[in-house]
Image (cartoon, rainbow, N blue to C red; front, side, top):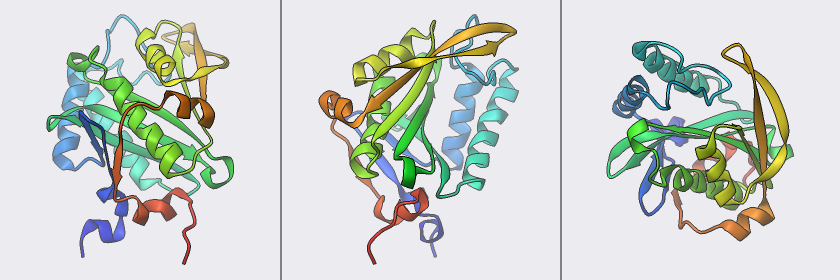
Length: 218
């Protein structure tokens, strides 16, 4: 029996004109860890609420591996985090997540992502988030998606603006021992439909639906 017979998420793929998003295999994980070791943002700033990048390169790489393994091991239909590896022209460039709790009841997802520094500023972040939003709204039936970015994270906020997110309040976090204001952002189904522009193809989803807490007809 193949891996997908027992864990169909291994066969789930999302494609856009430039990108492929899939569950990472061992080689993909190694490449992703290498990107983390090389750096994913300007070290002067800290864009994440969990300061996982404030570490030596090897430790950053290990934290990426442990996070992916932990999410797979802890997956439950009512609490899941789908972490795709993102490839452009066959090269791993970053990771894009789609997560939810009690999705069958709340119909809401949240997203997170990062790219290797050499891949910033090329529109990849917008395209890969558009890909998982298509998966969430068009294929899983989500009613809303949420995200967040610190005030100085102009790149992430720009992606959200392009895709139709609206302000949804603020949070204050302690980052590097100082207060940092995080802007919450929300995308409704109506707003998503109005800003939908990237063609997206999804394969291997039908077998995965029970893992997302979605009941299928017998």
